Length: 96
View 1 (cartoon, rainbow, N blue to C red):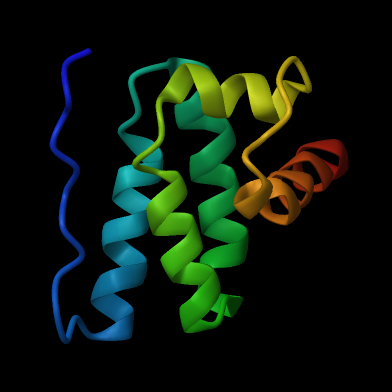
View 2 (view 1 turned 180 degrees about the vertical axis):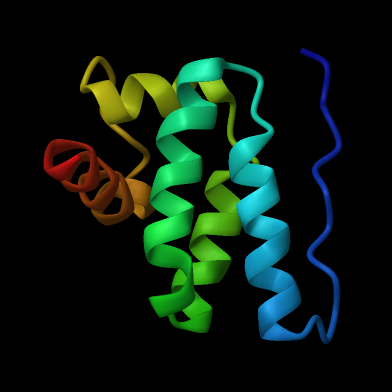
């Protein structure tokens, strides 16, 4: 299996820059459905997240888009570390 390098989290990144970076990463996915789902979620939730949640979201964005999509749509069980965040994304979709 080929190991794909993951982007590194910039050190000492100001919060506003970090939120913008994560928002852009949410909008520029490999699957159009993920662009729509994650950009809406990021626009509504990132500003209110604490640093630990931003770290978790940043980590989740490094996962394969197909896996994230299947987690969100319920076709696969998410990795335990992402369960609560996936549930929050699912709730966000339900409200929309």
